[in-house]
Length: 339
Image (tube, rainbow, N blue to C red; front, top):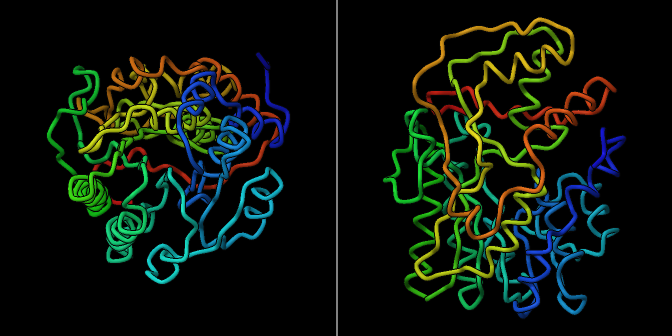
């Protein structure tokens, strides 16, 4: 295993390596794959993993508005077909290519406080458009662990059978998204899985990166949200692709994260030791947090390939070397549901 990730090219390689589970799953999944909302933080490497892990005869298609043309060029360079479309526009959705398999990655979280109506449209109306267009397909949809609300840290995280208790416009709209997918799954017998993700991480963004950069820059780390879960983005990509082997009607609900409950304080102190700098702590740890228990996912697909220890080492080395950031903080410390 690499001691450090030298550059973005190597990072993209690591995030895109298909697991054996992905390869084995797609030996038995017929048809093409279309990824809707592919231009976000996770989408490009998920699409590339699909291209590397799916049979050569299967098309991999990525759909987004592509406000950054460089993302489209990158995907095309990886052998992924690119389609530009606004998923809120019914006419554009109707013209999307046919595909037997669909991954939903669209949606809106940050900026919700200022644009609540757009958040609801992106998180509920656009999924309805997609379900009508792909009512004869199989669908894996990304959702969020925010739908659970805060749970006692001592409990070890929310499980899929827990009733949702969303807090704030974003979390409520994320639950609305799930209900839309569930409705169309029931009405049209669409096989689905819904993945409640908390939180994907790579070198340029994620909760570990947020904490590490605060420590490195000697800024305060708020520990009010005392604990969190993470998963290496490449492992989250692999679960999304393997989920096509476990679809159900109504949808199979799966938490998606790593097996550890991590302490914000202890992770900050760990990065402080690594950087040789003091970890400036602020706030008071509360007894509850946004936490997922992903044991069902681990039972189905195995434990993540990349450990938290490995992520910490890679992130620290990346920051020390002046590596780039996506400048997209997770706001994991928000306890009032405002993003």
